[in-house]
Image (cartoon, rainbow, N blue to C red):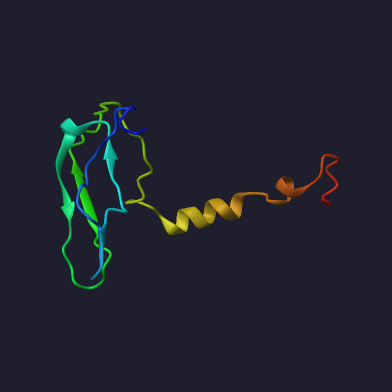
Length: 102
């Protein structure tokens, strides 16, 4: 079914190896094989389940639009504290009638 949809298997060797059998149970498929740089199994005797890898070429789209960000290099703690002291927080928590209760 995956082949009919244009997906090709990248891993074709067994990924689980025991004394009695070798099974290809982990799969990686791609529909862009031209971007494949490399793939394979990591041969390790730690356990019978071999890790696999796949490296694909990928170019991210470039965006030349300006990026906006906050610059805190010249942040002034004292000025920020004074700005907070100047805010009347009671007006922020009063109800619509303005009687100060929530």
